[in-house]
Length: 120
Image 1 (cartoon, helix red, strand yellow):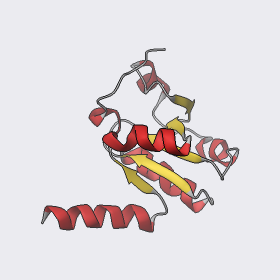
Image 2: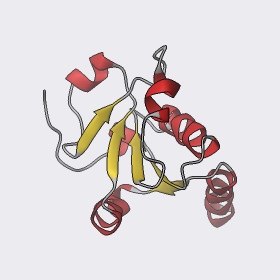
Image 3: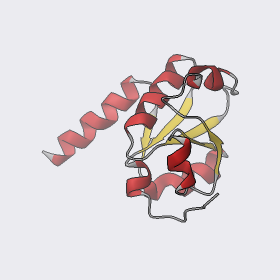
């Protein structure tokens, strides 16, 4: 049953045009693909701490989220995360719909993150 759920979860993200990424795979994708890390949480959540490699901070629920995404280079690789993985999955779907080919959603977001956290 668990393998069926895992397969379906991967299938869903693949159908949406992005790949789900487990925390353990993060460093490998970051290194191999020279990925850009995007935090899509609110400014208040970011102030509580963020993944040190994050260089872009776009509030998924903000009024200009899609405009910010449109300014990015679609040929680059992006790792997107939020608090628990829901908003980042939505952001990843939007990016894929807008023509981004290499988008990874960090599953579980900050709630599952076991790496270092940087405070602003």
